[in-house]
Image (tube, rainbow, N blue to C red):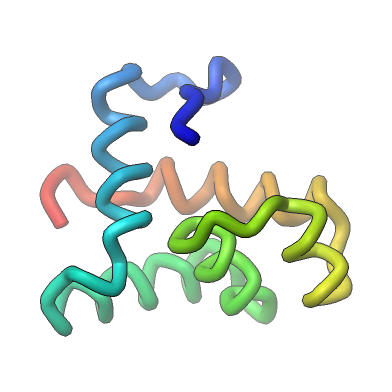
Length: 90
């Protein structure tokens, strides 16, 4: 469920665009999926797979952290970088 993050200095509509574009990952053309993969690699580093799973699925932060052996703070920092680096138009 989409809930804007008040800690991000990104407008509500922009956050919605990023959220819903990311959640539709599997329906996107290959080029756009690759761009999201690159964004996750840039924002998540060695934990990019956890970030990709978090932003593209409905899995909770707790589920992802337990699966990938990372802390929730780490996951949320990666998500913040992902949102900040997301291009104007994918």
